View 1 (cartoon, rainbow, N blue to C red):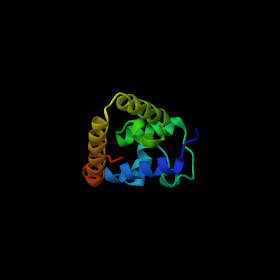
View 2 (view 1 turned 90 degrees about the horizontal axis):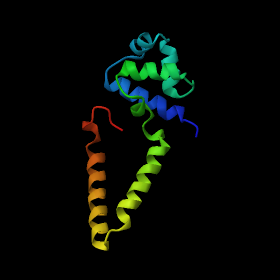
View 3 (view 1 turned 135 degrees about the vertical axis):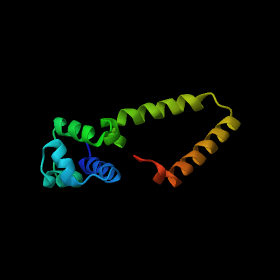
View 4 (view 1 turned 180 degrees about the horizontal axis):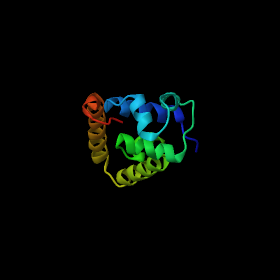
Amino acid sequence: MQLNYYVLGQRIQKIRKNKRISQAVLSTMIDKSAGYISYLECGTKVMSLETFVGIANALEVSTDTLLNRQLTGATEMSNAEAQKTFANCTPYETYVLLDVLKTTKNALRSHHHLLKDEW
């Protein structure tokens, strides 16, 4: 699997802006240039693991938070878990569970702006 550095950079930028940290301040925190932070956020540069962890620490978020949707193992596990959950459901239970999931998904999406570090 190859990381999507553009998505990663956009995630870093979004969290940085939510925390009201400028590129200049973040660059000082991790001992890099502001231009380098700009390149990372645009996905045009690839950072080292040390820089990645430094950014996570500077932004006070987990590395998982920065990687977010790039964790394919988590998606595969969720799909398998969902299949197990629905495997022995009656048609009525399946209908109700799907209705609850759809409603929950819609509520999450319509209120995502309330989350401090939104997905």
